[in-house]
Amino acid sequence: MTSHPTERPAQQTSAVGRGTRVRGTRQAEALNQVLADLPEFRSAQDIHAELRHRGERIGLTTVYRQLQVLAEDGAVDTLRDETGETLYRRCETSTHHHHVTCRSCGRSVEVEGPAIEHWAEHVATEAGFTDIDHTLEIFGLCPDCAGQRS
Amino acid sequence: MTSHPTERPAQQTSAVGRGTRVRGTRQAEALNQVLADLPEFRSAQDIHAELRHRGERIGLTTVYRQLQVLAEDGAVDTLRDETGETLYRRCETSTHHHHVTCRSCGRSVEVEGPAIEHWAEHVATEAGFTDIDHTLEIFGLCPDCAGQRS
DNA sequence: GTAATTGCAAAGGATTTGCTCTGGT
DNA sequence: ACCAGAGCAAATCCTTTGCAATTAC
Image (cartoon, rainbow over all chains, first blue to last red; front, side, top):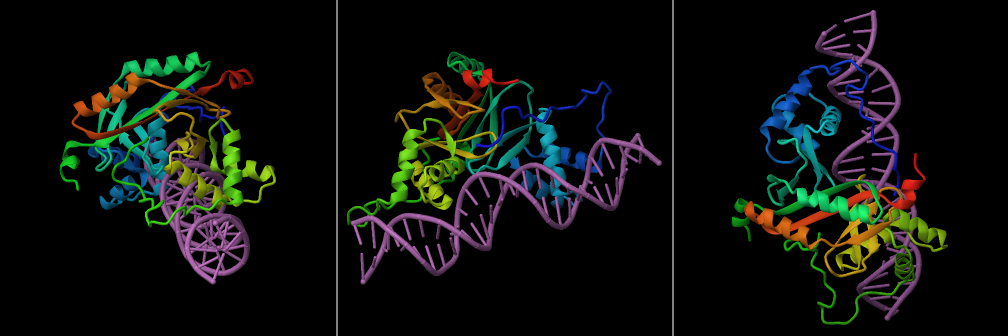
């Protein structure tokens, strides 16, 4: 175990008082476009590759940094796949939700479960914990992939 | 995370016909001892360090390999913390359960929530998915760690 | 004796960081 | 001009692999 209690990058978007401090760059624009086009969860590297395919000149580092910011702002959802890679996808709803993701093709469906959030909060509080957070991912085979299987 | 029909390295314990194919080594023994002593989730590196502290001569590689096997056999539970590291702990109950884990010290409490399992199964099925599985981790600060904090 | 196991060193793979260059405004 | 943002290369970090040396049985 390494780090952590206090960490948390301390977001500073608009903390300073002044408005937008974000520049509209060609790269950011392109990334947004790709995110808008891809409905499935994809890794940063995938997304970078896709951008390159489209002929965009953009560095992998930029993709990572951009996605990080978008994730912090809640503009994209993130999840870790079984190999530990972080996957990103543009967020559709702004409310807290979870996903049912296809193990085979990556397609995913958003689902809400207020009961779960409460339950998590509840059991953790009961155990004396504070500052509670949780992660929940559901994996399975989507209709399409289930069909074409061995 | 439990089932997973498709993968599984095809264990060969006792497949050949002959008996025990597993050797009782000093290292394996020591690792077991440490796992028995530590009630919290710990990273492989932590466990290795602990072993060294105890004066054991054992390589990090062996710890990783050993833990991998134990995890496959269901002898230890694994989970990924927020940084992506894999944490291990000897499994206590055989029933499906989840954990409320301290972000700071790693201590964890097992909790059960049949309702959650059903809900997960339900929403996924409703979305047309099959062969469903899920992961749920709750993080927070345990009473002790919450105290000694800013 | 023989094969399972160890463990060092090196490889891998994802993500981050240092630092300089570029392009918006 | 100025400064946020881009990006390359190098650095990190956890984890796995190659392969020779050990060791249990």
